[in-house]
Every structure is written in C-alpha cells, then in structure tokens.
Length: 94
Image 1 (cartoon, rainbow, N blue to C red):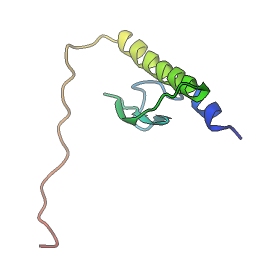
Image 2: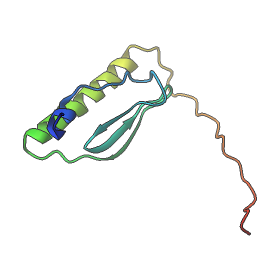
Image 3: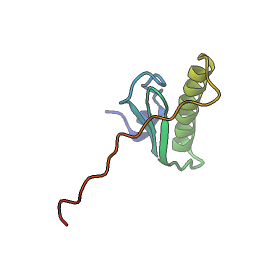
Image 4: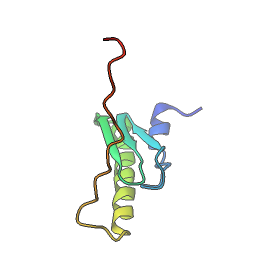
C-alpha cells in the first residue's frame, strides 16, 4: 500500500486532451481532463517539506504535459465556445 507522499509523487496518469473522464488530484487540487479543454479546481498547499516537494513535482509534471500537448498542436487564436446543453424547465414544485 502506498503512503500519501508516494501516491502524490506518481507521475500523471492522463494524456492531456485525450479523454473527457480522467482526473488528476494533487492535494486539494483537481485537474480534470477534457478533449477540448482542461479544468483546474481547488487549492493546493505546498509546505516546505518532502510532501510539498512531491506535490510541486507532480504539479510541474502535469503542467509540463499540458504545455507539451498544446505546443504539439496547430492551435487557433481562440477555441470556439461549446453551445450550452442546458434548457429552462418549469419548476415541478411550484
């Protein structure tokens, strides 16, 4: 069984922009993979200790992988925004 520090030191398990399901978690920070964009949510404390170093390395590895994937692509100036799938419905409790 891996300790928290060992788990956080593992390299990212997702390929940026490859799927819409993979999530990397670093401390309280979640990096959610998507085919069109990657979302980053939460917060991350980097204490001045081994755990902080492991988290910083994992964060750097994730960021480096994202940058490499973007640099390897022919990118538009701005990605088109996806249309919203939401719709207004009548309140069933009113």
